[in-house]
Amino acid sequence: MSGAKKSKKFLLFLVLVVLIFAVIWLTVFISNKQEQKKIEKNATYVVTKEIVKNVIEISGTVEAAKSQSLQAAADGMVMAVYANEGDSVKKGQVLVELDTSSQEYDIAKIDYDIAQTRINGNPKELELKLIQKKSLEKKLEDRKIIANFSGILADFNVAPGDYLEAKDSVGTLVERSYLKSYVEVVETDAPKLAANQIVYCTFPSYPDHTVEGYVVSYPQVGTLTSRGASIVQVEIRIDNPPKIILPNYSFTGQIQITPPQTILLAPKEAVSFSPKGSFVEKVLKDGKKERVTVVAEPYGMSHFLITQGAIQEGDVLAGLSLPPVSGTKPVNKKKNDVKNPMMNGFGNGMQPARR
Image 1: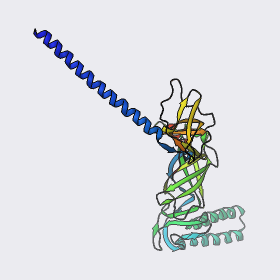
Image 2: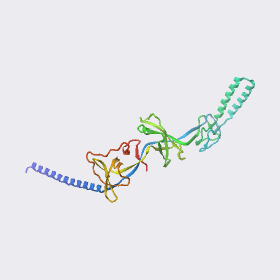
Image 3: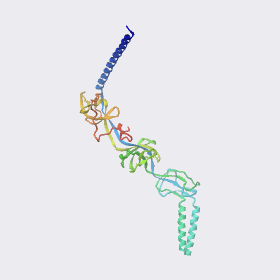
Image 4: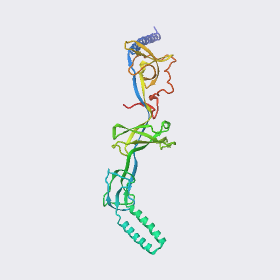
């Protein structure tokens, strides 16, 4: 026998061996698949519910309702301090007073000059002296640091004997009956905004609590950021905030676009499709199965969102695990049905509620 014939027979033998192994492997694979389908069809699944929120994610820092930098209007030595840090003060209350001896002397002198001018009877000179007195009285008033509104001395660092120059700040007065913040919202979420929408805020300083605020206003024109993104600045407000939350504290939050919605979810193994639409098989108490027509749409990787159908939370469904019939697909949702949270982009429209 020639070498060529031997090689040909050996090659045919190898092909035959490969085919035999392929048939064995395919048989085992098909058998396992059939067994798996049998197990899946005998399995049961439970309908669950989930609460989803239609929200816009935000972050920022809060400011006091009002804020006053307590600054000296003139140079001078501090003669008296009438409040302490943390004190509640009233509008118009004098907080700090500088040395006024020079101003008081000037006023006393102009008063004498005015009296002499009245005796001499020169109306023009008298008018000039009276104007000068008003200017001196203003300088005397500038020797005081006064609260422009009722509030709390958030910080206050000054003592008698200190020398202050004009514009030196000795503290900050805040009025915090409410807190406010200006947060950025991207242009794609701007059409969803409306005044008085509820805002839920979480503060690192108050981590186990949610503080509620609301949208006050937002401009009808966008702003281009340094990053090249178009945003709108939304003002939010928190009335009667907890005392632990102070101005300049940071927070994260959510603007609620619509009230939270409860949705029904069925595992994908329990939903099947036919040319007439989607359906599930509900397992009854006596063990019998009832086919129920539903409207279903994909929800993430493992479930279907059930928007219509006679099923409820806790119902037990039979495992179907049948691939969709060729040419069929999940029944499309109606226009006003709940959106799939897993399909949304930034701002997230719908998303699972925090537990």
